[in-house]
Image 1 (cartoon, rainbow, N blue to C red):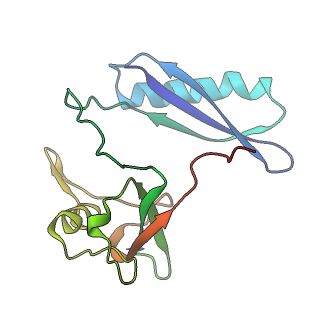
Image 2: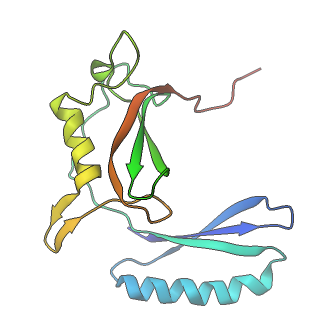
Length: 164
C-alpha cells in the first residue's frame, strides 16, 4: 500500500488547499522525511502560495476479512470526546463517527464513560498503549500530552451537502 505525502498550501488570503502524492512503501520514516523535504524544494518554486505543512500518512494493514457495518450505522451519528491536556486551559477533541448509541445516556446525551468498552478507549487515549518499545502516549496537534477525558457527548454531523 502506498505511503501518502499530504501537502498543505496557503494563498495570500490565508485560504488553504491540499495536494497529495503517493510514495512506495517499505522505507524508513527518515527516508520519507527526506523525500518530503526534497518534494518541498521542487514544489515551492512551482506555486505562488506557500507550503504550510506536510504530513506523511502510513497505511496500516487491518485484519481481514473486515466485518460488515451494523444495520442502521450512520457516519452522521457520532460522539465528541473533549480531552484535558498537560497545558493549563488547553483541550483537544476528536469525534468518533457511527458511535454506538448504547453508550449514550438518553437523559442528557452524554457518553457514559464508566462503561467498560468506553473506558477502555478513554484509558488508551489518556494513559497510552503498551507497544514493543514501551508506552505510546497520545498528544494533540500542538504536542500537548492528553491527560484525561474532560467530557464526551453525542454529536450529529452532516456528512454531505443537501440536495435541492
